[in-house]
Length: 90
Image 1 (cartoon, one colour):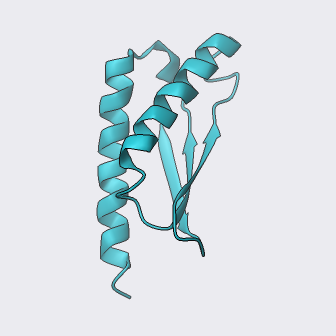
Image 2 (image 1 turned 30 degrees about the vertical axis):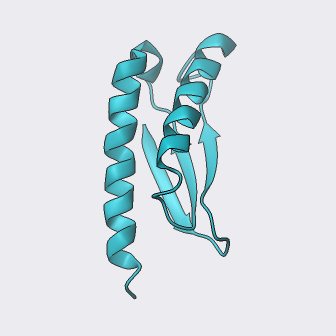
């Protein structure tokens, strides 16, 4: 997965998801991925700043287990939090 983020003018983060049919052929698989991403995002939402965040699915993500997806997303949220914490001092 890839996470893109840009600051917004709101007091809270927003989440966008882009999981295409190339990533997961069936709607059930796409919805499972989105459900896991939303669940992970809810846990991290309070720690993320005022950002517009887009999560892009990549080929192979549909074959990952829920635990693997959670672990990958946690690494992405931590990386995003660290990058944005360093840039908020400007």
